[in-house]
Length: 168
Image (tube, rainbow, N blue to C red; front, side, top):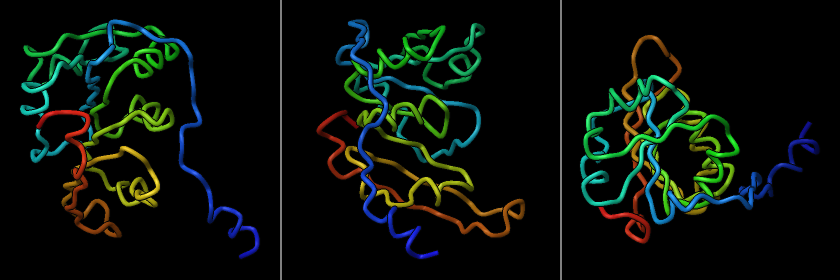
């Protein structure tokens, strides 16, 4: 019913997850988290890693995602045991870079300035009302394939103003 749906028209998209806890190790750092899924070849990982003070974070004791990261030799790996410690790192960093992962959802919910590598059939849902998110940047490069017949090929980006946070 339209009366029910109309209550959602003026939702705010600001931070809703907060912590006062900080971690000095991440002060002025760019936090990176990247999973194996939802990757594409048109994301400026090399520029990000070479031009910024970056730390790759994860929860995996085997560091599998970091080991597969092409620029791992240029970034330190930090493993977290719990999400409170991870959120304290986010609360301390200057910027977050990643793809569609759980850690990215935390950065989004905390309102951390962020740059996302989007390459998934769910990107159209993720980019819904994108203009309402502050300090949200992305490069989207999703090629339609027969596995998702209702999803369009999507190539677009939003990087205007990112230079306030990181060097590319």
